Amino acid sequence: MKAVEFLAFSLKVLKEDASPAGLRSAISRAYYAAFHAAREFLEGMNISGLSKGPGAHGDAPKLLVRTGDPAIDQVGHDLAHLHGERISADYRMDQSHIEKLEVAAALVNQASEVIATLRKCSVEATRYLTVTRAVKQRSLQLQGLS
Image: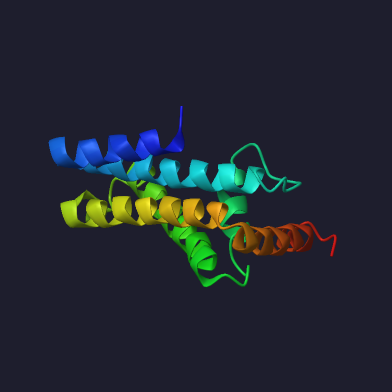
């Protein structure tokens, strides 16, 4: 399965089920689409020390900031934001802001932009190499090895 399949599902749910459960599900799946795209992006760089468990949700945003590439840095911030909203969608039933169509649509769009930005970077060889170096350095810093 590819990460973008979660995004396609999110878009389908937005169109077909604007109930609170539908909107919360769309947000959750959109986050996972962005997260898995980021994970694939980082794995392509052979980054050491990537968590395999729940810690991975914090690793990706932390690694994708301070890269020197403003668009990739924004991806890191967006992933952190999407993760927080996914937590609200999945676990915080008292947070009704998440049940508004315009909020869910904006978050699904944000996830789509994250994926598009990562794809664009990965096909621009010089840019990708520069980002890879920065992410590897950031990984070492976060592990206390630099």
